[in-house]
Length: 151
Image (cartoon, rainbow, N blue to C red; front, side, top):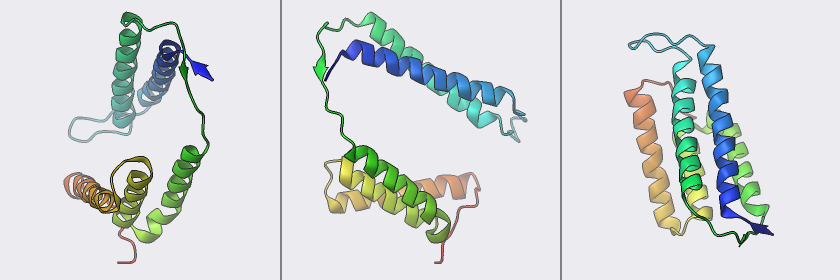
């Protein structure tokens, strides 16, 4: 199959812009709260704005840049999609039972091991480091109650 990079980038930009509008619309209908006590509408609004800015940057870059008219060969494979779906599903089922740290660490390790060029040890170290940083950010800094698991 041949895909024109310009058409692909335009399609991605339009899709991201549509998702951004959805988030902004949802955030608009929720209470915003105050600066000291943000309401439930703050996160969808922030995500919508960031996503809209990203989509507009991709759109502008695509319209300004000159792409050749020829297509690029693309292989569509089901295996990467199945791996991501399986890991996300397993993570959703394991999150409450095994806790935030174990689930996030194992999920990141598996994703890095499958999709990056890092070896097993580096994937484990990076996964554990990101899990620790996320636990510090959400649990320590923001005060979110994260599942601890059986440990």
